[in-house]
Image 1 (cartoon, rainbow, N blue to C red):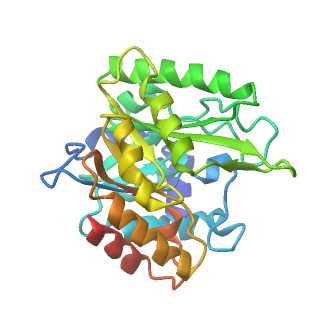
Image 2 (tube, rainbow, N blue to C red; image 1 turned 180 degrees about the vertical axis):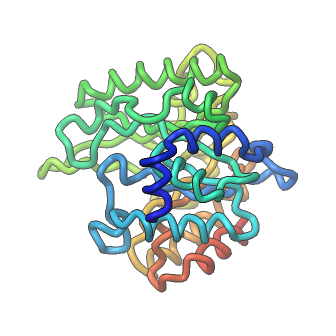
Length: 291
């Protein structure tokens, strides 16, 4: 941690230098599957994991967990914001890995403007300049919140800009609504996930470089029907499973959905980085085994 800070103070150009010499690889390897570890939550103020509301606030601990996860066989890469990717570049942890930049983090968790999700992270030109491999954006739509329209339009333009650079972009769509107490909740029912996939698939002037990042529905048996909505390649997302029982349930849900023809892999974050037993390597190896 201290060495990273000293480098940032004295040699900030070292980040760009590390990015320029990084050994790159194809997005999808010989297996045709993708296993990506996600760590873009802190920039949206979402720091909780496993019951600890500030688990991801310890940067040294988070970087250690990420480095351990990236070192495991079968892990293809990482999804994160610029600050975390810069740290990992300085640590030399991104060699021969897929690097995905997180693009819109302006919809801060719990904010009144959460659904007006501005693109405050990586721009397409940043991803291209750094030699990264893909981008990811979050698209949450609440039919009762006008902020969703601004996010829809910005997402479409981001899809266009990434396609112009021949860079894949992973769109993570949800239909959501606010509860009576004002908390925003994603609807994981089959109909809602189906509609969100249909909306996301049609954004921009071309879908040639668009991937989907989708949740498993409340009833996993619905996933086959849901994934018939689009021919776009997709990866499953994995959030905070919330304890040992929830983690086991998440694994079982992923196992079934990974058999579907459009599903190409898994992007999981807190479930793997903050497992209930603290065994990051074991959690990652279990997820890799599902592929």
